[in-house]
Amino acid sequence: MDKKVVIITGASSGIGLALAKEYDKKNINIVVAARNIEKLAQLQQELKNEILAVKTDVSIQSDCENLINKTIEKFGRIDVLINNAGISMRSLIIDTDFEVIKRVMDVNYWGTVYCTKYALPHILETKGSIAAVSSIAGFKGLPARVAYSSSKFAIHGFIDVLRMETLKTGVHVLLVAPGFTHSEIRKNALLGDGTKQGETPRNEDKMMSAEKVAKVITKAIDRRRRKKILTSQGRIVFFLNNIVPKILDRLIYNGMAKEPNSPLK
Image (cartoon, rainbow, N blue to C red; front, side, top):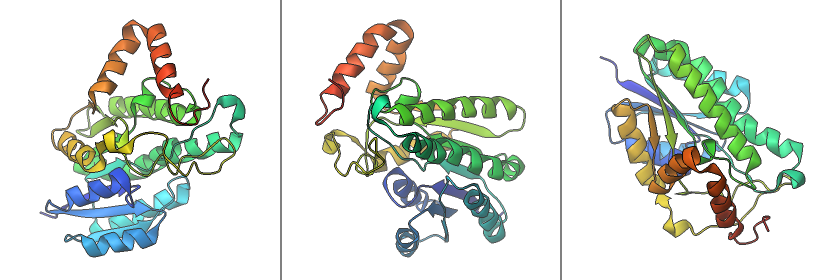
């Protein structure tokens, strides 16, 4: 039988990079996608399995179509699609340019939709897996993260419908909600005017490592899990939001307001 094929978007850093290295331990072909082709080329040199690197901006529909077409041309099949590419932001609604909201939605939500729709016919053939790397911010909105939370809520709705529509096909659909993870996402987060934040407002050393997140995701895919909330903090937020949402609003607000240079008062 041909080797299975996994596609990972946002594979040049963070969770995506860790996922590529984790799958490299398995007898599987890997397709890595990101805007930074230089980092992908370097990754190709580091990994031992056959790797296809495709320069991809997931916010561009034609790039996502090209990613899937290149994968089929090279390997002839798709078994796993991991929609991991994403960006964040940090500013109050009133101070956020519309272009920032649109950019975050284009990458996080539309990137997931584009890649999934183009890959779906091939994954139906292999009865494979589609995974979306989301956030607890998709279950509970985070203040000063309006575009980020909105994009994650949209992903959750998309994944719910996709799961039901493929219910009788044998396709596996997974929603993953990591907690705060040590990565570059906060340094690259957009401020209200569209400039990059540059520095993280949180203690990265106390966060879950990207490598640990990758191990959990690959295991959840292997076990064909439906949903995976990775941290105890995330599970507590999910639980409290269903029983005491008003209290949780205050707890989250107060916690986010303690960040350095927080726009919250």
